[in-house]
Length: 228
Image (cartoon, rainbow, N blue to C red; front, top):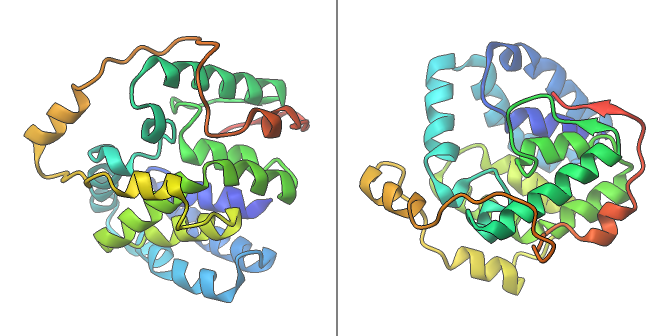
């Protein structure tokens, strides 16, 4: 489904290639029509900003938003497992699922990075993609709400994903995530303290949890594909 590939691109680190691709991304979203006119209109400010903005400014804003704020991290397991061993086990499971489906990671991103997951979902049929996305629905709801609070046009991408996943904004899981205090990316001392709370210990763990259901992952069977 091209819509997932397009949304993956919009959530990726801004580059000259991304700027050049914005007209094609916009056309793809309209041609497929899966989002509907309201969601397409909501994405227009981000599309315009990425197409016309100064690249350095776009990159600085992206880093400030997603890389310096733990509560806005695009690494999905960060919101569930933090930097615990459980996250390592879930990461290994997801990576093995990608490989079993012929989807190899070509870039430096972690398997749970949202743009990577969306790239993978673009290789699936719509029903399977929506089912997998729904397992991370509570995280998408929390990210959409937090981005809306920041007043950033990136919120429209997460709102579109919430709609596609049919996630419930009032779910208990979403409420728990939204109860966390938002990070202030300008408060470097506080951010250092947050990131230092736990040690990175990625590694296999048979008891690790995963917000993407094992049943949904087991049903994946796609032709070979290669990530960005």
